[in-house]
Length: 324
Ligand code: UDP
Ligand code: MG
Image (cartoon, rainbow, N blue to C red; front, side, top):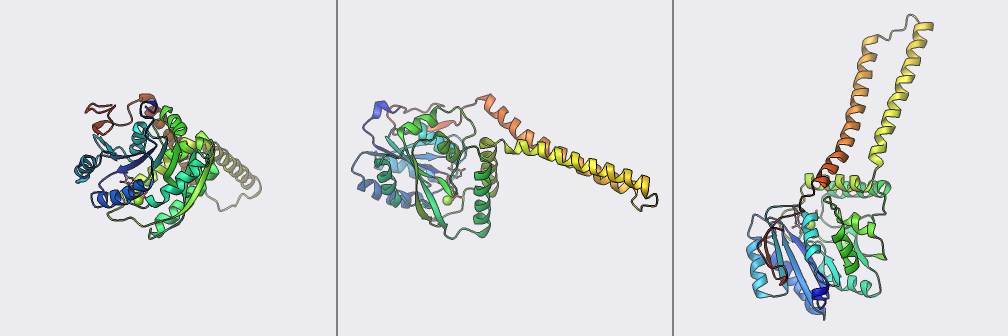
């Protein structure tokens, strides 16, 4: 995909899900930055099955500005898949991913590019502060990133989102990965190369509701842990060991009471109930952990396409209404 369009220098990728209140302001701020870059830029908007007027707004932008290309999914596939589709279609030498809601300030793009020109293949933006996000989101994000760092096989930097710049080389590698379960931050760290951070303060959302519901964030967190760590599987062995230890201890205690304290007040029923519940829950937890991994193996093995496209425009080489 890259070699046919070697003249495009920068690709900006923006996933969009029900962002009608934001799109025009986003375009205003992003195009101001595009004007500052003196090389050719394409702006790739991915409509992730929005149910509001987003797609029409995107179509308008495309007719007004030929640098705007877009993909429209046949349904909502989620943020990570939307970004993945953008990466598949991007033609630039440096590819920049940002959110539509202006929480990732487009004004940081020239700084990202500067770092790229210094030779870094991955420049990710790291949030110093989160303004106006609720304490619950901040706390869960803080705890999650720390757990992920401890457990993951690769070093995934804390407090980074998908806002980043990646070199063509890195994007080609990401595109070649067969994974269905795509946690871009993790995959980006996994590829290696020279990576660096640029710090910024995360602004509040420009308008509209957060599109990442708690359950979407939770499943992203779970996905990232399971895709990048086998520690939870090991945890089930540890739990098994622990319960075996407790059982042994109890056996010794019961024996001791039988032999030396025939009048001990401990009755059998309570002990048995506790033991049954304890073992039962340990087994269920372990089954659940196994299930999480097996479910993902099942997803991978089916090998379905990552997304279905209802509309593609602006990429002369891919223009079609067909399903990819
Ligand atoms: N988004 C998407 N598909 C979804 C959910 C979100 O493409 O199913 C987009 C959304 O339009 C926005 C970005 O992903 O551009 C980040 O979403 P949001 O701001 O709601 O989440 P945050 O990262 O701020 O928690
Ligand atoms: Mg946001």
